[in-house]
Every structure is written in structure tokens, then in C-alpha cells.
Image 1 (cartoon, helix red, strand yellow):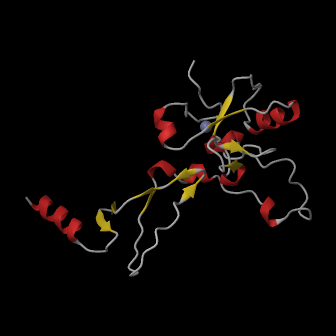
Image 2: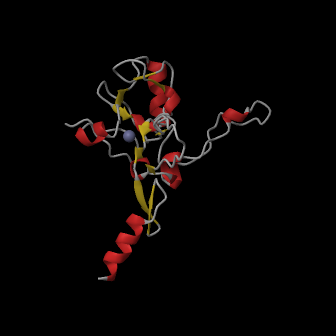
Length: 176
Ligand SMILES: [Zn+2]
């Protein structure tokens, strides 16, 4: 049995493709209480994890990870929070009932995965400085965004030198 992610609507499994995308797989916590927190976070009816149940890294925030070593670990006590739930499973969390105890960081975050496909996101750096420093890779939900030198956006070929050569060539080719 291949290692599939147990999250609702997630089809990630441990394979070369997910590895090159930087997706890691994490076992459910060993302690009863924390494992229950994860099981509840999944919002799957009657779901019980086994010793082999995995969740992929897409359900955790980037700050949930410890990336200092060779292996990517989840920090102690983190709970998965990012899921692509169907409408009937989306409900506000019961613990957020009083407004007075709410701090800004407790505000529910929009589900980033449902509005942004990180695998299809590209970063193009436009930098005309004389001495260029390469920027740190852009990381969304634990995944590095691919950097490109040119990109076709809304039918127009843009490149990081902001010149029109690629676009003109493409238009010219179409003319034949
Ligand atoms: Zn997953």
C-alpha cells in the first residue's frame, strides 16, 4: 500500500513527483491527546489514525516546520490547519466564541490552498540593479515557488529583462 496523505480531498502520496515538489509526509503524533487533535482537525467522520497514517506537509503552515536539519521535522505540538474542505465540512471552530479573548493572530485565515495552486505559481525576478543579489527563494506552504526568466501571462510573453523579443517572436510566428 503506497503512502497516501490522509487529508480530505488530498491525493498526495509519497513518490518522486511529490518529493521533487518538496512535499514531506508526517506520521500522526504518538501521544493520545495530540493524535486526537490531528484526527479532529481532519474532520473526517469516524476517522481513527493508525501507526501508519500520514499527513503531507501541505496541511501545515511553513512556521510549523523545523528545517534546520537534513530531515524536515514538525515542531512539537503543531496541529494541521490547512485543508481543502468541501462546503459542508467548513465550519468555524467552536473554541472561537468570545470576541474579547481574540487576538489578531487568532483570526481565521483564508484557506490558502483553495485559492492558490503553489505548483502552478511562478516567480519572475525583475532586477536592473548593477550589483544583483539573488533573492531568497519564495516559499509558500513549505513549497518553493519555481523561478522563471520569462512567462506567458494573459497571452503576453514577459521576461525578466522587460524586453519584447520573446513576445515579438511569438506573435511573428503566429502570423505565418
Ligand atoms: Zn495532503
